[in-house]
Length: 127
Image (cartoon, rainbow, N blue to C red):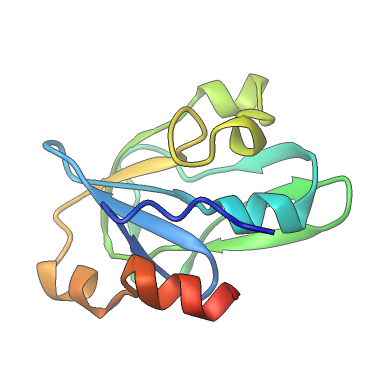
């Protein structure tokens, strides 16, 4: 099976992605991760203004199969969370790289972004 791995973002080995935007770093989980989880039924995210640290847990995602922790690809302050996920967690399954994004972080260190996997490296990992 082939999974979508956009090359405009960076990836954690634990299947979170980070995308540089004009506002900060947008974070979500990969197509591979949502497929492994199955139907997502609940997402717990931090509050706006909270600080998150790179590689530390920032939330929880629950599916019909499992409950999994979510890990921050970069550290910084939570600028915004995707509140649509609270009412429609299935957006993570339907569009993990678009409408299913989870949070935006500001103040991230560029060096932390550089430590993440490229799209090619991530594709090699999930192959």
